[in-house]
Image 1 (cartoon, rainbow, N blue to C red):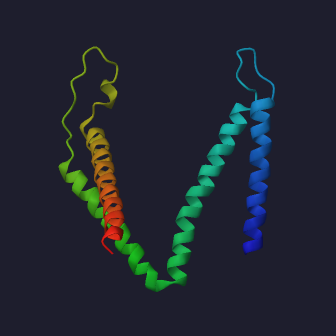
Image 2 (cartoon, rainbow, N blue to C red):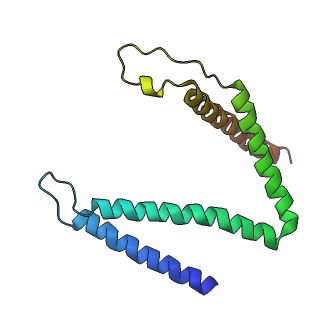
Length: 143
């Protein structure tokens, strides 16, 4: 299995290097944009898809092979779900007032509620991360 993953890494590295060279050293169209831009973007989408699949499959395999650590992982997921729920409770769906803007199509209460939930979740998680960093560094001083 490790040999297969190593071969996959080498192939992805070679394809990435080749497309990078084509992107920067390849031909350009009359307006100056590289000819291989669409290929490069498609390859980036493929890499993102591989990353998403890997980030979903590998934790599941790890949880199946090591059930004791699965409890910790599920508690972490539950904690994030609680943070998102708290952010959803505090988020606002009040419409915004735009003057002379063509952004009215995004001024929908359900969309604004989701966006506000994402922003508040980011703030909460950033605050928790900063507090954890400060605690870990100051606890080393007193030990």
